[in-house]
Amino acid sequence: MSPTLPPDPTAMFTPSEVEARTGVPAATLRQWERRYGFPAPVRNASGYRLYSPRDLAQIGEMLGHLRAGVPASRAAQLIRPAGPGPSQAAPVAALAGALLQALVASDPVRAAALLSEAHARLSVEDVLLNVMAPALTELGHGHARGEILIAQVQQAGVFLRGRVAALLELAGRGTFGPGVVAACAPGEQHEIGLMMVVLTLRRQGVRAEYLGANMPLGDLALYAQRRQADAVLLALSGEWALEATRAQSAALTALAVPIFYGGALLNASPELAPALGGLYAGPDAREAAATIIRQLRPAYRKGRERPHPARWPEE
Image (cartoon, rainbow, N blue to C red; front, side, top):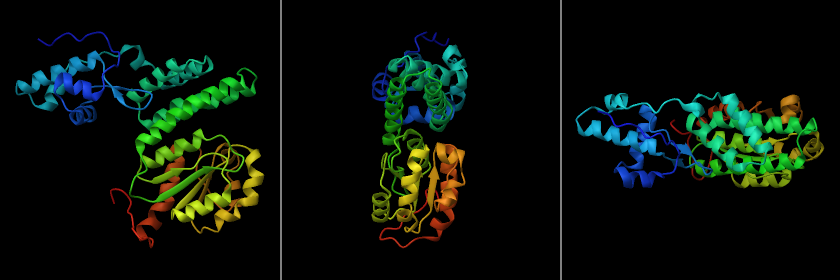
């Protein structure tokens, strides 16, 4: 008889603690997660997996089947499902709305728990685009309507920036693929959207570097040249960054590599990109990453003269 699953779904055990309790290596846990959809760990604020007592019970049940000679694929089918529960049934839009409420209420603990839940159910890209981004957008709209204080908006921005920065750190910079240098335009302080693009690029094998907000374009061009970047990505969210960008854009066009422009201002007026001597990246992180990769892949495969030529991943 299969053991009754404990009701407690609270995530509390790290992969090493699970291995110590069950003898199952962390690599095997990740393999089961990919192949069979269990265990179903949540992610903590730094993006690391955490397992619940319910997960441990399922792992023990799996081991029992395997020891009895049941093939792994069949053993996975026999494991008692954890049950949908309210958090699993909640639609993505509800997660975004709940995240917004937690941010407005200055409740980072609740916000972190909601994002952990989102990471347990969704890809990183879907969390960025369908949970974080809508909440961030609505914060700005709420402030424009006079419903949310700028202090609340900035506090929420600090929290979300920290989450995206942690994911960037986990993604690493990579050692293969084309190199893209990304920064916010002179006078531009809104950086979370651009960080999301850089994260999406890194997860697709691009060696994307994020340099920060309010970047003088002369410095950006010099850095891109020293790094032998294959492209530059610049973000502008509002008119406040446009005049300085126009005045300094010649430094970028002189690089003779593709210059991509994105951000809220470009989403509203995509024609600004060719006027600045560049290409419009796209309306969101996924589309921008796809545009950049689509543009760079053919040229990169032809090869460029580098001291240590790289290649596109999985080429």
